[in-house]
Image (cartoon, rainbow, N blue to C red):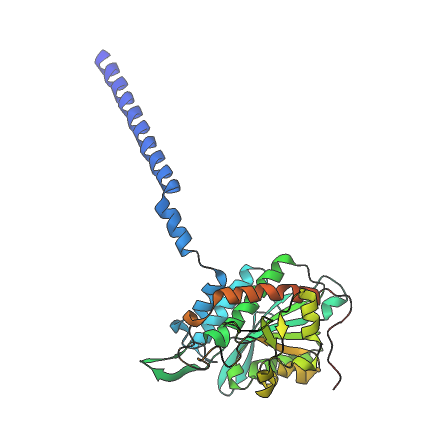
Length: 333
């Protein structure tokens, strides 16, 4: 009995030592995991800026140039939908995708919505848009045939997505904001044409339309950040700069020379509604040589410039969404 009692005490003592040792090891491991500089460095190194991250994805070889009706543009739409959902940008229709047909292909615009807070002004919708499709493949260069479309127009797409995230977060807009990513621009502005006609049929009368096209590189020797197509059709640039308290938008003669106002997604809305509907761009025909080229890749863009431009247009859009009167108007012809 005594031997058994001594044995029992020894066994309990050994078990106690084992528990203490286990807790010590576990505690040391937990401390090492928390304080490990390797883990912290890895986290910092893999945390990518959202502007660059989304653009690199949209312009990646995986998406094969985002041609309308392909799996590549389907992946692009899915990524945009996920970001909208994660940041509480609501779908305007039953889902984010508004489906239409282009020849024998199924296409879809992706449409997000941040409703205005004013019971009257919320019906004066401001549309912020860009096309997210591209041409798919281009002329082969060193074995590369994928026309990635980084500047044309992953750059504009990223701007619209970032602006949607921003205004969904602050939720301080009296007018409603509609964020539209158009498909089939490269097939003759088909996505924006479909969108404008559908809104008109539904009895929607937008206040203004502002689209983004090829904003991935800065202009040189200009006293403004970007130019506005159809500059003289309205007072949009003048009021936008007034709202922003700096020269954000300016006039580029080449935009008129090459009829850019009629060649981007703003134009179907202008035709349908006769409202200020214009495009922001920084491609000035001298600062980027890869238009519809397989070298239109993310590595050739200036992300610092892009992020700066996106930030600089926020105050102008905010003021557009909150003035009591419609201050932006078409100029008399």
